[in-house]
Image (cartoon, rainbow, N blue to C red; front, side, top):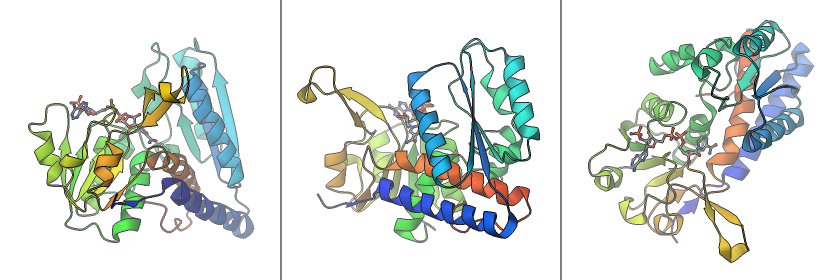
Length: 300
Ligand code: NDP
């Protein structure tokens, strides 16, 4: 194996440390405490795990953490009323509605009811437009985490060929916008892309965000390229015992690591960066709301 392993767990710990420092400075200099509210509708077990760990880490960096847990059959009007109260609450600087929402709720309507300045997930249509036009916005957490790791590894990304596989609104498209913002030459690939192996082979940077286990093999990777694997896929692992599973990415790790210059593992790569960037976005939102300088190195 030749690739340098990009340790997302260690990087995320460093980012959380920077956030904690920023929070303690805000408290000392301005008597301000950033507040993050997470709204969870229903009892999806995976969402429960995310929300619990978000709450724990929010408190660990010194922020105020608020959780609103609503029943699975909550009406749209009741959910919108909770968001309205959080929009109006001056002690809350970030609002995150945990997705997916139960089917009877209109996700776009709900997300677009969040105050864009508090939209720490960066999914509000205003933030999407601001990012797309290269203006200051709240940036979706997973692509922001990928960008931070890429900047850390490469220094400047200017002029590099980047291929993003996947065009979702939460990962692929904002990732492509961020890479464009850093002056990469960007290709977005998707399920209709012709000759995907050939497209990926041209890339200095490959970001895989597809949701198909190990679909990008090593022989698609240009020697020395940087590979960021966003995928989280659970496979059966009978070798670990009955009913056991293991996590794999969208990239075939062993074969890709043999040719890449650097690669993120799964688990322990992009995943831990997502919550760290949520905390970074909350700090940024608090600074902006109070007309203070933004924390350095924690924004796009
Ligand atoms: P989506 O399902 O919303 O999007 C998947 C994208 O992959 C689509 O654009 C689709 O193309 C494309 N695609 C599907 N099949 C192929 C194929 N054979 N060849 C090329 N492209 C293909 O997924 P998300 O963006 O939400 O998530 C992607 C992965 O990232 C998932 O594994 C998810 O779990 C993970 N993830 C990880 C996060 C983290 O914190 N680490 C956060 C968010 C997601 P088309 O549009 O044409 O259908």
